[in-house]
Length: 83
Image (cartoon, rainbow, N blue to C red; front, top):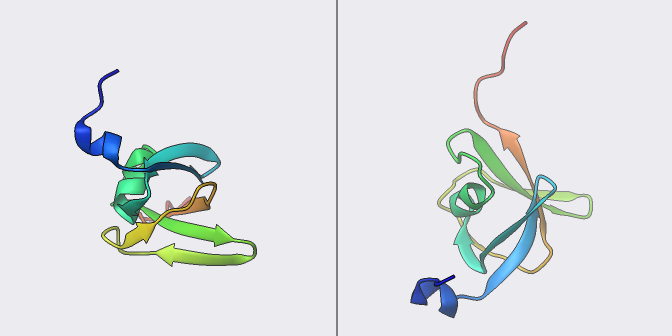
């Protein structure tokens, strides 16, 4: 498979988003990582999990430097359904 030259030069890391492995460039944004995980940045917020500490990225344009094996979860930012 031929990859664009820009992707070949970037160092890709694998992180976990909502329990699924996602490959992404080390230097990315919260929105780009959500899209790489198949999620919509307009309706999901990315949260980095470090032990018992959680670091939310409410702005999808926030730059993130990823490290191999990091764990992220997402939370819905859309309307809450009412029963």
